[in-house]
Image (cartoon, rainbow, N blue to C red; front, side, top):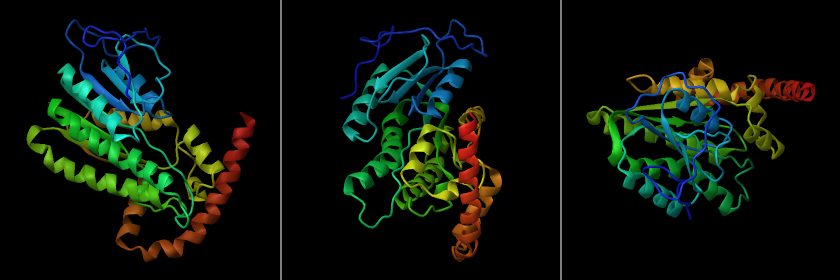
Length: 292
């Protein structure tokens, strides 16, 4: 079950804390714009939460663990995003507050690398649930209170356009999420709601380390992993724009990935080279980690 919120003037049963982070946008006496963020305790998600608070948002974070931040304008709902019952309960709590949502940011994601042959049903279902079902279902629940002119952002992955061997379920979920975002863009246009998707390659987070320890693809290291701060900054930049779009980081990988989607046979020719580069990248990343 999703927990009750901590105490606030709007919700009961909530505990509030104060942030040490400074706010770049002065807070006024008027109600702050509200943002809802999934995966708010993750490597990218907690930075998105932090930056939204600095930009003057009131943030509601949905995750199993509380974000490692404290701020009187940050609220947390404990929710397992692999469980649609918990998503529905959390969504209902937010809707009952009847506070318009200015930004909805889907940061939650998981990957369980491995060959599809012999993959257990629960591993398959978890990846589809968190990476695809959760953002679609939560969006459907919260759209009724999305503010006109609001923004929906999806933290996707280059795997949506550049398939990763040994991560086929993850890649399939991310590709489907991209299609959903593109269709949603058209659906919400009459309400002037913008939709953006951010497609980072590998990001230097605990999730990447866990992925590689579980046999993740060396293709993650064709380029050096991005910092989570840079990905969060791209998300904030996207939300700040009046129009949606797709943001690939690095941009050249997005171009090549989309070309491979048009001509899949191209991937067969470049895969040996990319695998060689990726193996070198893994070794370099390991050396850098040892120095820290």
